[in-house]
Length: 158
Image (cartoon, rainbow, N blue to C red; front, side, top):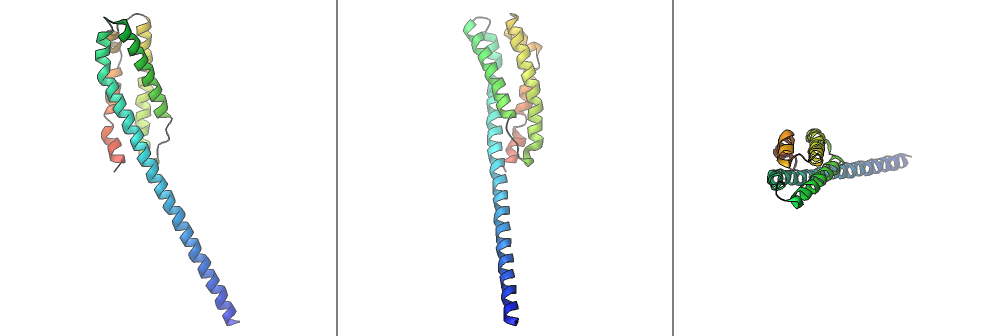
């Protein structure tokens, strides 16, 4: 009977050890998944901010050129529509917990940016010169606010 009890205790120890190994593996996978999500989010956010910075750099020159070239005005409208789509795509990302604050800031700036893009587009439809439409909005400041988060995004990546 003693050996039978010893066998049951050994079985329990083996089952407990297997359970601990399984929990360790699952927990380890969870950590790896979280790291992977953070890396992916950081990459997406950095790309988004880089493209936003590029848009901000091009915007004043394009606005100036629209006075003399209708094709540039059409291109400006297309660029603004594309930026609105990038905003929507980025806002659709699911941020990992570690990036929640940065993502919330970006979403807030993005909401403002969408409104300002719509304001500029409506002004262009009303034949207000692009330079004036941009000057009348806060679009450049909002683009600057978005790009100012680069350092915080870089910190997410380690």
